[in-house]
Length: 380
Ligand SMILES: [Fe+2]
Ligand SMILES: [Fe+2]
Image (cartoon, rainbow, N blue to C red; front, side, top):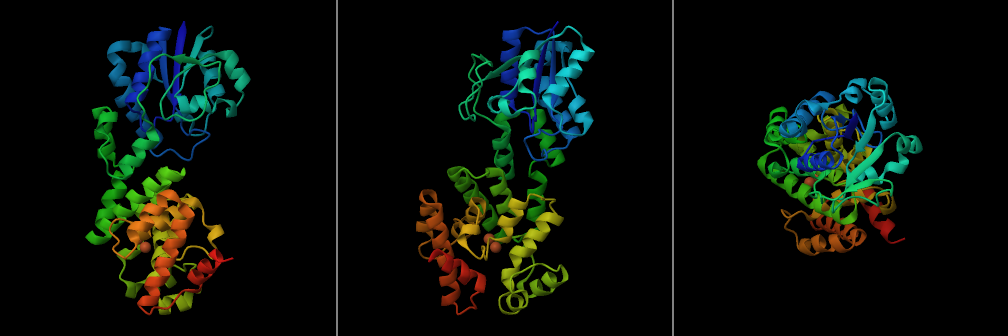
């Protein structure tokens, strides 16, 4: 008996998954096909849809479209989802071998997973126990290990990450997904759909327009500089949550929440609006369940930055620049900063800090010591 095992996060499953599996079935002619959604890939942060949501998505997006071709030979193997922990592929293959002694195992993975094979648990044993298959995708990561059999078909250049980023940004992704997957995602508000609905309820229209402009620029800058696009888009969407509160109420709120704002008393007295980024961070955590420290830090740092430029991560700088140079900004020179950001991230960051200080000076506002310290760190 030939078994074909197709593993992945399928977060969400898309048409390239179906094309890949179809190609593998043509090449291998298996007697049984198992699609194995990982509960959580050992290499990724928590999946974005829950285990049961993904099981439903895999049924709608992979099993159903291939039912005609494979009939009852095709099924979802939910052992990893049911285990509710990160399961190594070597464990799943052991389980299948125990349940089906003498099975000839073929494992199919996407090209990004194939490229990371050497860092998997027990790679030598994995190589012994199964034949390994993948296909090339134009935008895929790194080289594929030589023992993989490469399916001749060229796969469409789609990855689940791109689809999640596009959904976060409100773009249409229906051409890459089965119609049932689209309707399930809409119905359950997955991958940022619910988040965007809540944002529309929380932010006044001009603030929402600004937020979407920042998210668009942050994503493009992230792509340019190799920053995680999903983190950049998410940080941008949530960066101004604190602006949902009138400036006059920010000091009281910041005190009640005991937010750690540098020079807190002075800041809340002299420039209360500066507290909004700390409120945004708090609500991103409490209302939107964001627990990624890199995202939270970028949100917190989008107005005052850090005491020194060297402490700012590429994600921090991406959001800071995207916020100060988004297409809805109108100050003189903003267009030049926006263009500079695609050529030199550090220079654009410095220009953004300068623009912010200039703006405060022209309006005769108090300059926050952290803003000055950040500026002086460029001069060292
Ligand atoms: Fe802001
Ligand atoms: Fe903003």
